[in-house]
Every structure is written in C-alpha cells, then in structure tokens.
Amino acid sequence: VGQDGYISISHSGPMVGLLYCSASHVGLDIERISDRPAKIARRFMQEQELVLVDNDGGGAAITRAWASKEALFKVLGQNCYTFRDDFLLTAKLHAKSLSATFFVRPLSCNQIVFFMDVEGYCIAYSILQS
Image (cartoon, rainbow, N blue to C red; front, top):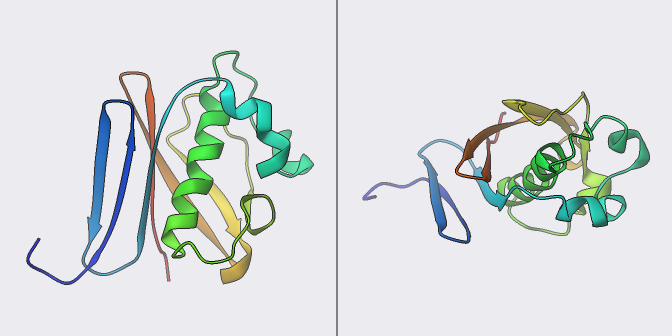
C-alpha cells in the first residue's frame, strides 16, 4: 500500500479479502455460509450466547457468530485468547444482521463486527475501537 497501517487477510473457497486501515488494528474473516459451525458451537460459544443466535435453518446466523470471533481474534493480534471465553455476544444475532456487538474481555469493552453476504459467503470485519 505504500503506507504504514494494519491489514487482515482472509480466504474461503474462491473468495479472498484484504482489509486495510491506516489508524487501527483490523480483523477480517470470510466463511461459506453453512450449518457446519452449529456442530461445534458449544466449543466457541457460551450458553448465554447460544440463545442469542437465531436458528435460521440455513446456518447464516451461526456462521456470523463464528466469523465474528475469527475477526476479533485477528483484531487482537492472535495472542492467547479463546473464542468461548474472551469474545462474548451481547445481543440477538439473525441471519440478516448487518452487525453484532461483542464484549471483548481482554479489552474490557464492547467491539462491533460488521457483516456482508456475497454469493453464499459471510464476510465479517472489525476495526479496533479505542
């Protein structure tokens, strides 16, 4: 890019994405929308989070939850954080949600993750809020 800044890169199937910000840490994740994350949801979400994720039958909401935690993990620099304990969904998450708020325990604050759907893939991204 020719400038200092922060980037995050992700890919899934034929989709590739790069997120750049000159001023703050960023996280990007791309996931194919499916019910696959539902099979391991208890490994990356606490019970109080699971009741907030809409059971839409197609996996879009749970894919958003998984991709959000991947993006947040990247925002914080992939240190020793756990998806289940360090990134907690705070409000209802639907198949068509455009954003979600998570309490990020290591920062003791909320962080917003934004979503876009493109050709059967969920793109989740977040920019560190100070």
